[in-house]
Length: 197
Image 1 (spheres, rainbow, N blue to C red):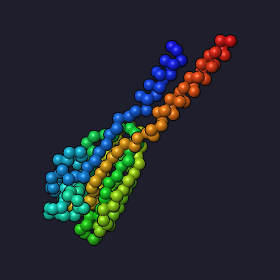
Image 2: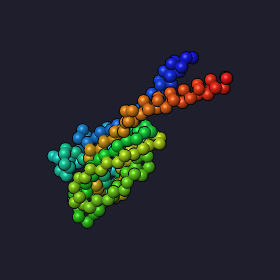
Image 3: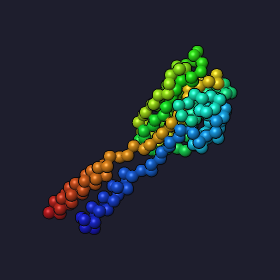
Image 4: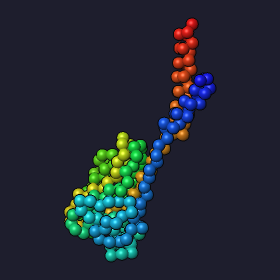
């Protein structure tokens, strides 16, 4: 194999090794039907309790936009909202908006967010408005995204606008890797020549 052919093969292998499956999710819950104890989500499973889809217009016009999810469903048993699909290993930006329950002043609610392990426990007062939260998360292996509400009184935190996007590798990284591989190959060839003399 000539040095040029080896370089092309090495560059190709480097490019393949750095590409990854990109998985993303964008859900504002507006395509869901407003209902108490809702479980027919397009992108989510509900376990260990219930959640409600509420919205504007509707019986509970508490969301900034059309629909949002009350994470403590009407059975007084807060549910876990977990993605139906796993996300491949890699680095992701997770963002979502979260508000207090907007109803009972005596309640402060909390939620655990898990994505490759517990990434946050958030507590909000009843009248806290929607706030954007953003996290950079690196998954070592495929995993689900989950919101687990700590309530149990049928009035919970309000969740909206969940987005997960893969964080791309810097554009120059494959080129940098190819350059390092080429330098290693040249050094190896030089050693081979010296060993023969």
